[in-house]
Length: 492
Ligand code: NAD
View (cartoon, rainbow, N blue to C red):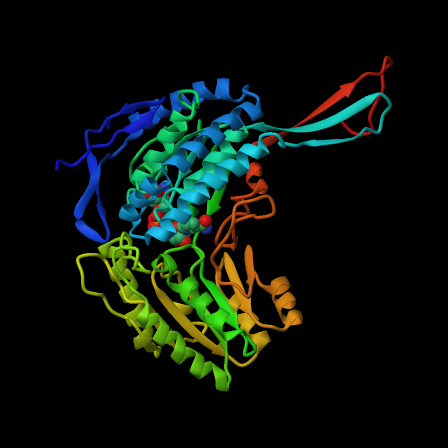
C-alpha cells in the first residue's frame, strides 16, 4: 500500500507544504510501518495560516458564546462517533495501550463538552462606584490568534485543552503538533471544521521546532500556549516576553509518591505501578520517584513491587493484553537507558528492568532502582520513560523535604491512613497537583480542576478547568455614568 501524504489545514482547505519537504511518522511499536508523510512547514505556510486566522477572528469574536458552544457540542458528538477509530490511530501513533488511547479520546470529548457549557458562563465582575449614578462592569474579551505548540505524549487531549477554551472565548488558532504525533491533531482539526467552525478559526501546520520558533516569535500571534519540555519552555517564554504577549507553559515534571509505613499496601502497589509505568512513564505526571519510609515493611514492599513490575505485559499497545507500550523513539530509548546506566554507576541498585526488550518496537523493561539519594541525577531530572527511582527516608518530615527537593512542581502524592499527615502534606507539598492515596496521574477536566505546575513546570497558567479561560481572555472595565451633572472621582 502506498504511503499517504498529508497536507496542512489552512482556512479549512488542505494545503500542501510550501517548502515541498515532508517528514515521515512511524509506529513506535512497529517502526517499519509508516503512518504517512507530513509537511515540513515554513514561514510562508505560517503567513497564510495567520492571515486566515486573523480574518476569522473578526467573525468569531462577534459570534455569541452559546453559538460558539454549538460547534464544540457538535465536535464532541463527531468525536464520540469515531471514538474507537481515533483510539486505534492514537495507539499506532504513540504506542500507548488501546485502553489508554480510548481514555484519551474520551478526555477530548469531555473537554469539548465542559467548555461548551462554559459558553453560557463567561462571567465578569460588577461592582459599586464611589460616585452616584455610575456603574462599573468588567468583562472578558478574546485576545486574537493563538499559537499552540504541543508535545507528542497526549496528541489528542493536550491540543483539546487549548482549543476548547480558546474557541469558546472567541479566539482563533494555529496548531503545531509534535512531529512525533501529527496524525491525531489532523483528525481533531478536521472534526472541528466538520462541526461547522467558520473557515480560518482552526488552522493546522505540521513541522518541527523551527516552526515552533516562528510561531513563538510572530508578533501577530497574541497568545502562545506550549506543552513540552522545560528547555523549550524557556525559549518560548523568552520570545513571548520580548513582545510582552501572553504565554502559557505546561512543562516537565519530576513527580513523586510518598509512601508512609501505614499506607494501605494494596492501594499503594497498584498506584505506584500505574503511576510509574502507565503510558510507559511518558506522562508529564508520571511517578518517577518513590519516597519510601524505611521500616521492616518497606523491604518486603519493594520486593513485591519489583515482582509485579516484572510481570507487566510489555508489547504493541494495539494488542488488548499488553499493559505497557513502547517508548516513542529509538533516540528516547537510548536516552532512558543512559539515565539507568548512570544511576547504577552512581550506586543505585537495579531491582528490575534496566534493559531493552525483544521485538521490533522501542520496548524498554519497567525499571526500578533503589538506593537513590536525593541529590543524584535520577532523583532530580525528568527521564520520561518507565523508570522509578526509590529514595528511602526515615520519617514524614524528611519525606516532604525530599519530595520538594526538585526544580519541578507538577504532581506529588502521599499514601497514608493518618489524616493529619495527609492534610499537612497537601498543605506543604510544592506542586500544582497533590493526590492523597492515589498516584500522581489521573487529572480530570472540570470546573474544580486546574491542571498545571509550580516552579519550572510552568508559569502559572492552568488547563482543563474554568481557570483555563484566563489564558485566552483579557479584561475590559466599562464605566457608565448616568448622572446629569459633572462628578469627579478621587483617582482617574
Ligand atoms: P519538546 O519540548 O521536545 O517539544 C514540544 C513541542 O515544542 C514540539 O511540538 C516541538 O516541535 C516544539 N519545539 C521544539 N523546539 C522548539 C523551539 N525552540 N521553539 C518552539 N517550539 C519548539 O517536548 P516533547 O518531547 O514533545 O514532550 C515531552 C515533554 O513535554 C516532557 O518534558 C513532558 O513532561 C512535557 N509535557 C508536559 C505536559 C504538561 O501539561 N505539563 C503534558 C505533556 C507533556
